[in-house]
Length: 94
Image (cartoon, rainbow, N blue to C red; front, side, top):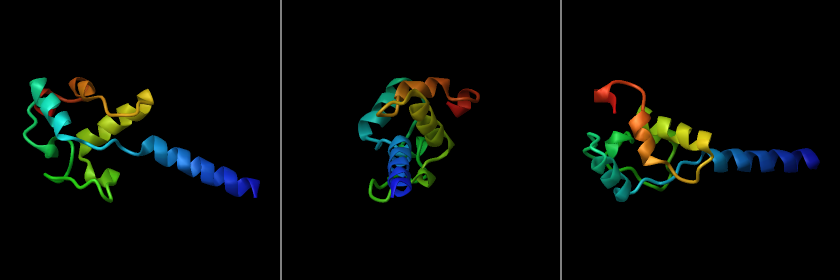
């Protein structure tokens, strides 16, 4: 029984730590305000209008996945949009 409880608790912690924060229109505005070439949600997501229901990491492009990785490294509750300045790659990738 202890093993089952431990497994459930571990799974809940892993899911909670890796669950992405929901993107908002304010995030897009902040990215644009930094002078980055974001035109729409596809700057970090695969679809132009991502849905919050049923969201998975597969709904993110490489930039979005990188942001989630950075969020998890910092053990932050939300994605830090300012981190996009450090996104690897040339100016066209920012």
